Length: 92
Length: 142
Image (cartoon, each protein chain N blue to C red):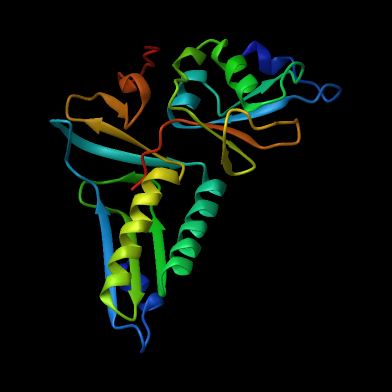
């Protein structure tokens, strides 16, 4: 378990980031909880994730979805949002 | 559950629709010069469902057609149908155009990922940055 996950508590809601495919494998988890302080956009989320162990594998091709919609790095995020980091897609 | 193309065709066909086009994407036994022995798909399922529904709605708005779309997840064998699309229109032009649109946009927008196992035992996420290769039983953080 990542230390950042252990810090989550009901008193301090975290920004939960869902991970898929290769990213879930690299982080060893299907999600990571980030302390919300200093996070207001998707770009902030990516910067925080890239600083974690395994996070440097999140490249420039990563896509981000907020509430099931692909968004730009400038999109705003809050603890209420469903945030997902998507590796390059490979359906079909 | 295998995909049944006949079921999709039946769902879009109608007495006024004289052109029916279908597309099947099947599991290939090779990729980048290497022999593929197994493959599995995973998805961000709620978003994949939502985007697939958007693609159907968009194509039905853009052309006078009816569209059915299914994608399998999980372990697939070589030759299995991974994705099936059926499109019916009054005429063939719009049916071909809409079918092409749906498969191209699916590949671009639907959050589905494919992991291939090769004959040498290595496993790789298709399309991953940095190759995405990892050896069986371990993770390569490259």
